[in-house]
Image (cartoon, rainbow, N blue to C red; front, side):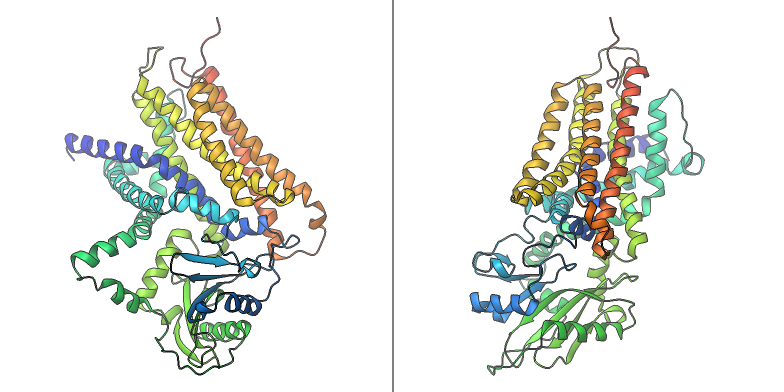
Length: 519
């Protein structure tokens, strides 16, 4: 490959990485935690501390919904709880917006699902940087730039891939060490990064793409055709004849039996969709998650009054559209292989965050003047931005965990507490990185993140000391796992703080990361 071509790819790789890097750091760090969405939910509401309405039967929830909002009987959904400590909630669409409510919230439904759920808050950071609507599209564009950075990076390093892949040259040349670590992690996890880039851009930009094609190529008919193509239940008109519905438990049992008959090893229902509730032609779709298959999400459609199976879209019986749609989510979130794959995705998420952090460090090192005390203004700005945004993100998310823990015990609004703590600490970290000397800001913010992580985990462990001696439920293991993982991550951040301090004292005196020499 010509040197001019390589330089072009290097420029593309550098600037796409820098432009998209900060958003991708947030997405990868939050995404690593989102892999354990249900475990974080169990940590917030463990089996011994149930959420409000957790023990309300699903049939009672539906009765409350129909009594308070009779107009919903033609079309509504029920989101099933992940465990006994969480509450099911109803979902429906009114003339203005989507509405969500548990049994006790029917008189004042929310337009936000799972308000105050920490796991959903972290997912929103991963999905859209916590910015409603616009953030999703921003992350779609960022995913496209991410894919471009991957391709250009591969083309740059392809000629020397075999020779330098496992090289880790430890010495006084910090840029070479960071370069080796950046390249090794990037190449070894490359297949997964291509998956993340492709699925992320499709999931985030799908609606915009569909809207554009609807105007350009389908004369405004695409949305209707698309809805028919992905439908998993027959469209049936209401008969007008009342009928008694089977209980949700009976419908779930029949749907699970029908799903397992297709050959999947498991089927865990998480959503019910009712059409024409209380009518003889009522249809109920039961959506569930199956493990060890790329088509993780499947649906069984049943007759609401007698439980007859009307359609099965699970496992081998998924349509091409169903397989494509389900595989996007499974590949992006690692839901297809149980705990082993989830831990792999967790490690890949943290490694991905490291890639964008180390990419910024390499940019700073490549523009540093080796023998000058005064470094270029651009390198100082990038160093401060890297500390503020990257470490501030980790500190902010840790703050959200701390705020959730405090809100649970003090009876505060968890949603407001999470947002105030996360965004407040993030902005404070960015401001701190701007006013403090760069090496001191790095060490102090890393230390603060480590201390906060460990403090939250230990506080929760001691606060639940009595619960560990009781009979354990699956949620107990999840809650303990989150605390232990928090302690482990806190130790990692403490080690990073120690390494940053060591470099500040004993590294290159002309680096932006070096402390000034004592007079």
